[in-house]
Image (cartoon, rainbow, N blue to C red; front, top):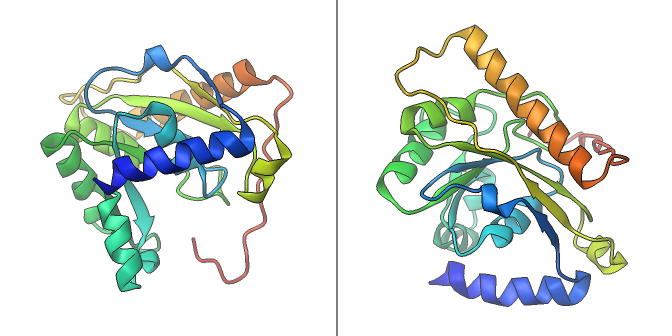
Length: 212
């Protein structure tokens, strides 16, 4: 399987370049499928998070433009990625991960802010968790934010938090949604503090031609 092959290629390569990552609280990850949630800080963090928890495998959301090239389309789908229109997400942005969590052995990674240029949390992860019963597992990444920066030897650090469970039978009100979003943000803040109390993420400026 291509997923396994790439893990065995890229994990040793990244470790050679940057050293072994510091991974904390991995034992908090539950058995079975779950939804890994994290602040989106670099284009690499889906890969780095997935490598940190392997052999658990993930499905990924990716913007639909990445699938326009036939070769990229084939490659991404082999890695369990599926396209999402981030401007007009539509029902598939929820139904596809719900189906995969229920019918496969794949967990999924979701960045609740949706983009590296925003810190505002959105409700997709909460809705998917409620529909599937899969727990939300908060995580944070600190470290190099570009491939070139890996050569600086600044350590990659990942911290996992306690799972957040949502009762499938409880009505998801606006108040409950807001409470869960606050809980997720509080978890991210705590995990950052545990890794490095002086850590501060400088949000990049959104490019003029970037709609996501």
